[in-house]
Image (cartoon, rainbow, N blue to C red; front, side, top):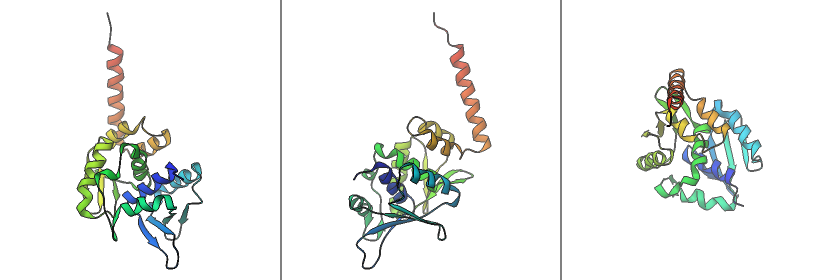
Length: 202
């Protein structure tokens, strides 16, 4: 089975703080990731929409998500690890994985003064490559610090993802906009519409 919504959820978790666990005496690997409490409704909708409840368990007490890895995705997850360390290389994400990146932002993103940030457990030495890859795929500036990546221009991010993802995903990205960014976006839209209205052809 190669079910894209499940793969996107796995990739989003690997980008953030997803870690692999294997219980003693159990051959099944699990990907466990801490959740952002405020984003729980988005996750619930996602699991229901794509019928992923069989593969995913939510622990409300620990506020963690467990993804039970099917054999098809064990190699994918192992590819992101060097022994026990989580790594990243530029060929780990392609343009076809844009939905997984947006999913990561909607599930694990936190609004900060400077933009949207999400925490990661990818080893620090690989964060430059990760930030550059995300910048190339999203066409927005991405900066990194210790255990965190941040997108500073939320308005530009919204404009870039519209048309590349569902209206639901876009609306959740739009919810990250603060009042100043919303006003700026509306003003820019009005200027564009005004300019289009002034165009005349002879």
